[in-house]
Length: 474
Image 1 (tube, rainbow, N blue to C red):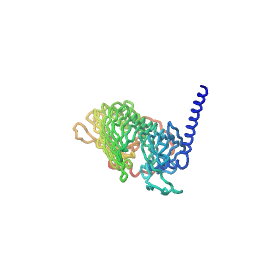
Image 2 (cartoon, rainbow, N blue to C red):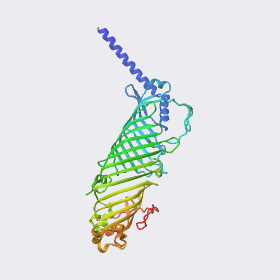
Image 3 (cartoon, one colour):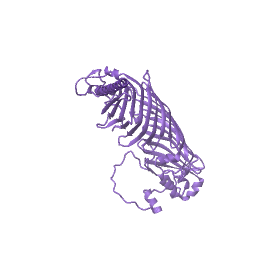
C-alpha cells in the first residue's frame, strides 16, 4: 500500500514538474525576441500605431499578461497617448506557433488616455502612416527585413476596468476629464462589436460634472451607435443618443441628441463655482450637436432650455447696478419666466433668445459667444411703471417706449469675456458715463483699497470690442 502511495505521489510530482516545465518553456518562448516582435507587430496592425510593451508573462489561468503597455502620442515626441499598467490577453497558444495570433479575450486595467490638441487646433488619435506590405521592411524603419504576422482576430470578449482620460487643448488647459471607465463588450462572427459602458465621473472644464453614466453601444464597420445613454447632473437626469461614422476615406462625423429634466439650479451654479446663495429652481431642456468631432469649426446644433420656479442672483454687473439704483429685483431675480435658445455654428453659440422676466422687469439678450469665451451680446432692460417711479430722475433719455405699453426699455451691450464681462448698462440707465465702476462702488461703500501688485502688460486683443461699441459678431 505504501509503495502504491509513493507511486501516486511520484506521478503527481512528475506531472507538476512537467506542467512547471511547460509553463517555463512557454514563457521563454513568448519572451523570445522573434515572438515578442510578432506580438508587437500584430498589435500595431490592429491599432494602426506603434506599441511599446515592457514585460510579458503567461499563466494557464490568466493567459498572456503584457505589462507597461504604451502607445505614443502621434503629435508630441516623447509623450504617450495611452498608458496601461496591465493588459491581459487570452489567446489560443498553438496557432501562435504558426505565426497566427487568435485572441479570445482582452482585459485592460487602469488605462489612461491623454488626448492633446495640436497647435493648429486639430485632434489626432491615429497618425497617417503608409500601409505596411505583407512582407519586407517596415516603411521608414531601420533594420533587416521583417516578416509580418498573419493576424486573425477572434475576439469573443473585451473588458476595460478603471479607465481614465484627459482631454487637453493647445494652450495646455484641461477641457475634460473622465474617471472610473468600465467597458464590457464582445465581437461576433460578423465583426460587429456590442457592449455596455459605465463612467463614474466626468469633469468638463471644472464647470459641469456629469456622473454615473451608462450606455449601450454597437459598432458595425464604420458606424458607431451609442443608445440608452443616461447620466446624472446636479441631481437631475439626462438622456441622450450618439451616432458616429468614421470612414477611411472621409472625415469622421457624429450626431448627439439629448434632453434633461429636474436639474437643480443651485447645485449647477455651485458646481460651476458661482454664488448659489438664495438660488432655487430646476432646469429642463433639449439639445443637439453634430459635425466632425476633430474640427470645432464644423460643429452645428441648437439648444432650448427653461427654468421652472427659479430664483437666482444675476451677473455681478447687474447686481451692482441694482445696489446703486436700489432696485431689489436687480439684486435677486425672482423669475416668472426664464428661457434660453441658441444655435451652434462657426465656433460660436448664437444666442437667439435669452429672457429673464420678473414681476416688474425683463432682461433680454442676443448675440454670439465664441467657444473661447469672447462675447458680444446686445441686451435690453425693460422696466414697468413701478420701477420707473422707483428710479425717478435716475432714468436717462435712453429709455424709450417698448412694444409693451406698460414697459419702457433701454438697449445695452455686454462684451469682453465670460470670465470678465464688460457692459455700458449703467451709462444707458442713468445717462452718465462711469469709467471706473469698481472705484465708484468702493467709494460708495468705503471698501478698502487692495494692495497693488505689479502686473505684466498684455497686448490688446483686437477681437475684443469695447463696452460702448454696438453689438455684432466678435
